[in-house]
Length: 336
Image (cartoon, rainbow, N blue to C red; front, top):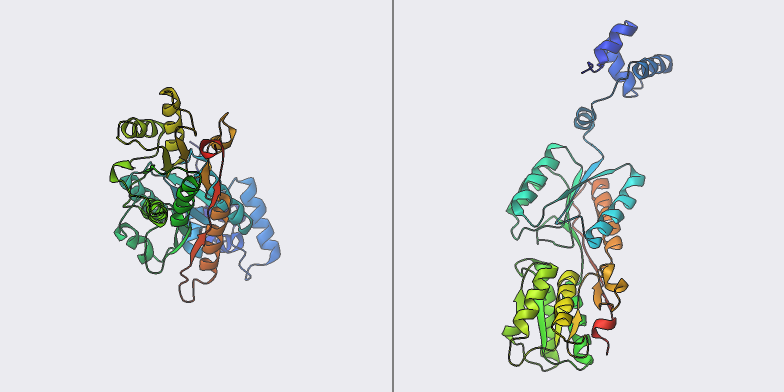
């Protein structure tokens, strides 16, 4: 392996001090333009590469931002990341993407790696239900911003949608369409987003004078298989539900596939509403009703909050709670 060129090699080549080379490379005003040009030309000829991490430590900024998501293979998180990048790139920031696969252990490892890489901020959709793992980020004075999945922490900003309103709108729509026995299949309610979506579902039933049937409520992870398994449980109940609100489009799709396999007509026999507005929901032969979370806008807004926080780093800490309004999109799966 070829030996990397150092500032000492450049200094030797030009018969000047390493300190002069360092100042020239970092545009120190004490160095003449002629010397600076000569050092840059020699550095280029000798294939010199600056140590970006060392430079970041020296300047106090790396212009790298860590983005942590549960998974990158969903349109929702892909769109959030795109929004973050589109907002940050014009400001000279680069994004380092990590995924946790819903594992708190991986999330901790990702955070540790990003802190060691001297990132200027961490933007995260967390799988944690406790704030303790994030104390280290705040102790290092690194801006921490939650998006989509958040925790309630003093001094920490967040960008979310109104998940309660999303759950409420989806359930009220089914009630307005004449469905009375409405099930709910959601994620882990120890996570605030799933708790709020469930609360919206429950409140819509209560406001309509309908019973909240505990046997109609299933808590599971987001996947096609879990959607199918939820239907297998629900159709064996007496009376069985005739509609479903899901906290996930993937669960909604799995539920619809299983209903059709069992001979049910959607939505005549059983209506389904998902959550997230994944692309497949509108491109299927029978389209799926869903709640739009506006991920691109969420990503851009998260980046804007970060930029504002960085800009005011020397002043009092900014704590912003941005809440976007969800949109119910009614399609074939709930429109008779």
